[in-house]
Image (cartoon, rainbow, N blue to C red; front, side, top):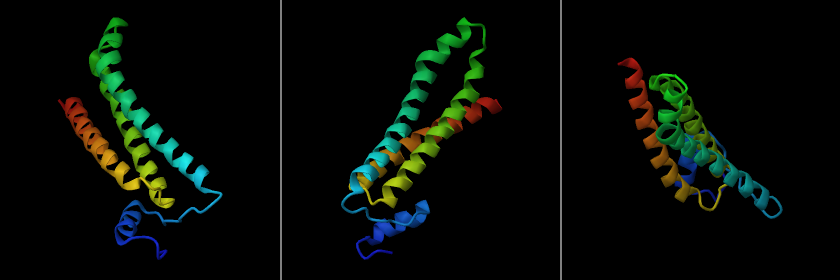
Amino acid sequence: MNAQVSRADGLMAQLLLVKPTPVYAGGVAGAERGAENALTLSLLFSGARCILQYALLPFLLPAVGIAADATVPILLVINVAAMVSIYFSLRRFWTILYAHRWRYLAVALTALALLMAFTIYDIAKLAA
């Protein structure tokens, strides 16, 4: 690994299955914009899940004659998409050694924990 990569960054890179590549002048803006876009996408998935689960689906589906239990598979798909998106945004942050990667890690781990809890709850609902 590069001498500029800390031991903690190297460990995270191994966990995320990436090779850190510092981006130097000329490519920094584009690489950072891509990383920020990945973050935005993952947060949009998480936000869409909350809006669907708590605001739209409980009222919309029964209004059109579909049972409320039909929401669970839809929410499971959204949960998985959000978790995958968060994982890939973390990979991108560590690949380019994004300046705020450790701050985002805290946000990402919190979001992943919540999404995992929601997924387990939804699977338990399906099994019941």
